[in-house]
Structure formats: C-alpha cells, structure tokens
Image (tube, rainbow over all chains, first blue to last red; front, side, top):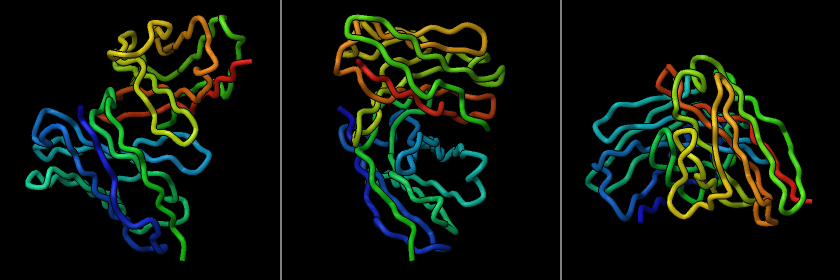
Length: 116
Length: 110
C-alpha cells in the first residue's frame, strides 16, 4: 500500500520560500506515477497546486506557476515543493499525493502558516 | 482556470438518495472522461470514491455512483447513511494538462 508523508516548517515568514518534502513508502517513486501537491486554506476548498512525473515533466496551476518549483529525489524516494514569495493567502494545509486524474493516494496533510 | 461549479450544500434523510452536480466547460468536464470525486471528513485527507466518471476504487461502497452528460458530472449516493455526512469534491483533467477542483458540497444527513 502506497503511503505518503509530508514534512517541512509549519511557519514561514511573508516574502520567504515555503519548502515541503513528501516521503513515499510502499513503492518506488520511479514507478509510473505522477506526484503532486494540493492545498486547502482553513475552512475552504481544495486547490490543485501541480504535479511532477518522475522523469521530470512538471504541470503547474497557472495561478501559481511563476512561484513554483517541484522536483523528485529518487535516491531518497521523495519529492518536494518550493513556493516563493509567500503571503498570508498561502496559509493552508498542504497535501502531497500520487496520481493526477485521479489523485488516488493522499498524505495526511501539513498545516503551513505564513506569518511574521 | 475557474473552479468547477458545485452546490454549496445538499441534504437527505437516511435511506434516501441524493445527487451532487459538478459543472465545468468544454475544456475540462466536457472534453475528457477524467472526472473524479473525493469525500472529505472533518480533519481528514480527501478520499477518492469515483474516478474516470463512473469507476469505483476497490473498497468503495456501490452506493456511490457517477455519471456525466455534456459539461456536467454527477455523483449519486443511494441509501444514505450517517457516515456519508462529509464534504464532496469533484475534479477534472483539463485541456491545459492541469487538474481543477470544484468548490465542494457539504452533505448533511438529516
């Protein structure tokens, strides 16, 4: 059974870069999966952030594209998200996940708060 | 990209059936059969319950079913149970190779 676990700082200052890592267990990250990120602001709905194919192709939400970088670290079976120039509007629970359409496995989510 | 349109809330009594609609455009829901539905209980991660419009993952109750007509997809839950009370999200693959979600529908079991 595929399992995913997010890790990273729970508090980020405005204008800085939000960095999260997702550790994959139960399968190799080089299997034919898309690896992605979804976020959910407190009390609001889901927003697809983007995904990366293990070979390196990336697909980003157009509204976040200019601030986003995703990468895969196959040696550690991890993938990561970097979102630059964050504001309070980026405060959310961030989920890592496998798949694109559909998103079939989800991590438990991690709350990232943007505040000084 | 604008979110897919879902009703904010629906309700039903135990044993009844309800349907949640999800309206997109000819660039997403209407173009591909890659519509998925997710169930989210409070404080939990979403769970995939329908994929590719009509398919259920292993372990998901057959009380959940999906369909699509034109730019609108639908999720039907039959034989409502208290445990079905949750927020339901639809999503679709798009012509830009991205994914878009609906705004979510809160289901209340009366």
